[in-house]
Amino acid sequence: MKERAAIILAAGQGTRMKSALPKVLHKIGGRPMLDWSIALARKVGCTRIVTVVSKDSDALSAHVLKALGDGSVAVQDPPMGTGHAVQAAHSNIQGFDGHVIVLYGDTPLISPASVEALFESLDAGAKVGVLGFEAATPGAYGRLVTNDEGDLEKIVEAKEATPEELAIQLCNSGVMAVRSGDLFQLLDDVTNDNAKGEYYLTDIVGLARKSGGRCAVVRCPENEVMGVNSKAELARAEAVFQAGRRQDMLDAGVTLTGPETVFFSFDTEIEPDVIVEPNVVFAPNVHVMKGATIRAFSHLEGAIVREDAEVGPYARLRPGADIGRGARIGNFVEVKKTRVGDGAKANHLAYLGDGFIGANANIGAGTIFCNYDGFLKYETRIGEGAFVGSNSALVAPVSVGDGAIVGSGSVITDDVTAGALAVGRGRQIEKQGWAEAFRSRKRAEKKAKG
Image 1 (tube, rainbow, N blue to C red):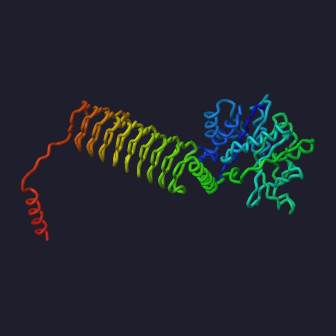
Image 2: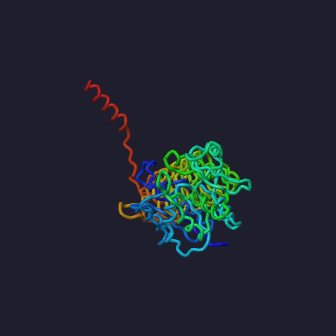
Image 3: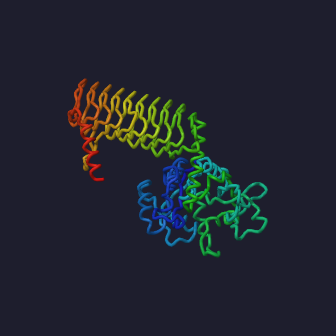
């Protein structure tokens, strides 16, 4: 197989997004759109990946360098069309001998299968492979004109198309694959003799045909190549992504009782026989193991839920939450950077941050791990089989030993030994008749004031 490289075009200004954040860094499924294209290039085996940005794109350049390292950023200055943008990456892949795919930073949903098919078209002898789609409403899309053999003859812009060409529904996505030896040679012959005075990447199709080369069309679903230029289009792309992930989960044996209300991230892992109730959000880096139940209105991020555990309803798992086999995290319980042991329970109204809870321990309603002193975080450790009474505050760093009991309403500041009872609260006192005397006095005061 020929070596592969990717050039990702991300120099557009994205003004329609009306955001200070660069357009291609807006997220779909919890991942920046540009990172979708980078991940796609990696998945299909691209050994070199270059992102083309505009000048003064410091935040975007920093993002690319962090993801890909030195030599991964090319600057298009000034912007003079897509062909000019690809030319800007020439020096970054100097000496590369293989196949090049041109992708876009604002087109996040292209499948690896579609890109593989483009590369295969080059292996089959095409000089240029273009990714096309049948548009429900072709509108302003460029049309792909093919011959009787199905090869691509030319790409025609809608504003320059004849009535017959406008009737064509096969449209240009802009994504194409070209042999490296041909790509920049063809681009050298592209001119800016057009209304915009720009160098169009699409012109290489006509030039390749003129030199006797064959150009191929690879078809993909329209949803794969939807570009994102506004917040409305971002929302539509998110909806397409979510619909696909929901179907993937159902096909994999996950029960979704209200599929349209559950939201996934790009890396959500859920094993078969998991039940997910309605209105659940999976932020990035969540793994739910078989047999677990995620009940309604829960939010999970950076967490692992092990076999047969139950989370929610109305639970929040934050990064570092590790819920053990058969454990239960109930309503209005928040867990952060805490390992909850097998069979342990925190069924109501608790904050469990920076800690460890042993197997089969029971955490009462209203319990708080006081993990932060305004400067640093500290750990709370609860032993196996321990019982923490309701409305208790455990001031970290502190440990409760195996089998120990903490009385309700306690503030625990010192370690509790295994098997002990710890009570940290004021002693209850009782004054006989005080309540009625108090009420009589207050009624008299109220009457005196009229």
